[in-house]
Image (cartoon, rainbow, N blue to C red):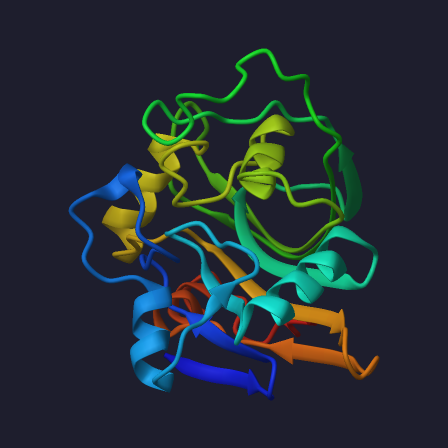
Length: 242
């Protein structure tokens, strides 16, 4: 994997879409994992500090030892972290908005069998800024045209599938989301654009280094498939702030 940042304590990689972070009962047939690939690449153990969903590409941080993992986990739990995502969603959103909608934990039958199903919803806050819009002369569903927005998303909290669930909550699901999305628009992108991935990418990670106190700002470019979709939607020259 492409390494975006590395020091004596941490390494940050650009995770490809479709790659699990670590082995999971959810996908027993999968044989490749980011943890395993990076461990073999560096020749040492690595410790994932945060997660990206399997279909989400982009910035992923690992610690190089258990002490560093605990130190960075504390940063993630506090205010010293900033995460930025780029998403293509259905419809024309507001220019900017904050989604403040508590989320109940999504439980998996295999991996969360012992979890409390009655656990109350947790606070979840997501900010977004609209970067561009488009309207295409294709009927998808009941409308004669289809509309899409390009968003810069900055989650304030880190709940499971938070961005995908929040965008569904405001009726602007992310294109390519097979769990929380709109199947008609997903099919349109597959058939019209040959797009078979979730159009959500972790493009930026900023944090206060727990050892040096320095501000670290890491960015990841969009992959080739995502970049092609951006161009085909007419957004090739839209500035993409990180």
